[in-house]
Picture 1 (spheres, helix red, strand yellow):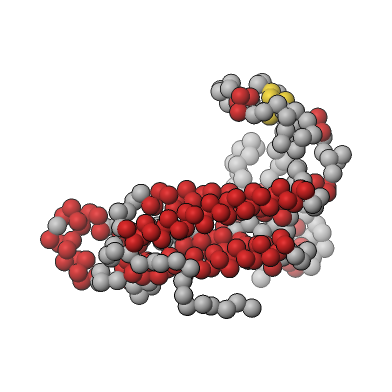
Picture 2: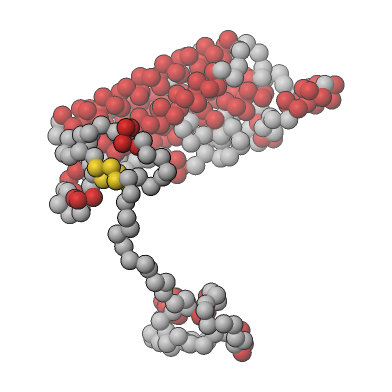
Length: 311
């Protein structure tokens, strides 16, 4: 059960309207690393956590907080748009070509779609996408993704902080930056606690075991660029403590030169046989083994190798 409290987590009142900055601030709502992403990411991680207790509680605590951040920034955007109707903006732009160039960067959907309010979209107007979230069911993998999301979010918030001089906006962003700092640290700490509890470890998934993979390649780093200083970026021992890195400066291919299978004639791929006209626009039968033949068989229930007439 969720319960909405009308009081916001922190003050979200700008000094004055700024429609252009409102568009920029949309990134912190609907961008790939915006508040909608982390809120939904943590909610689905929490709902899908199989073990009750501390980890599930931590995830859902943070998810609910992030929903509050979405509300804060939405209110800030609405207030940045307040008092800047389209008529005033158009008049100001007409009187000042320089201002017109700046105002040209506004998001017209704030007025057309949102009615002067925030949108579930990024700063370019692209709608928020559920594909942004990571909720795999493996807490170690998910906590690493969470830490990365908070790092990217804090990075973008810091950039936006430097794009305005509005003290009210900066006041809210200073709070958001602090919460991003807290969340980065909490996910990194939870990663270590997961290991201490013996629930997860590197490499993910640790319960799959290492005996199935070709372990002679498990700790190789392939140097496949002209740069030769890659080894200096790595310590000798791997983070999982199981081996040392083996940096190969000139790795060689391990597989053969592949042959490309013949294309189904009905797909009309260019082949080395030269072009020839086929009566009726259909290619000769391939004995029922082509991709389109198999698709037709599956859809019509025809016997393999037969070619039912199209209706």
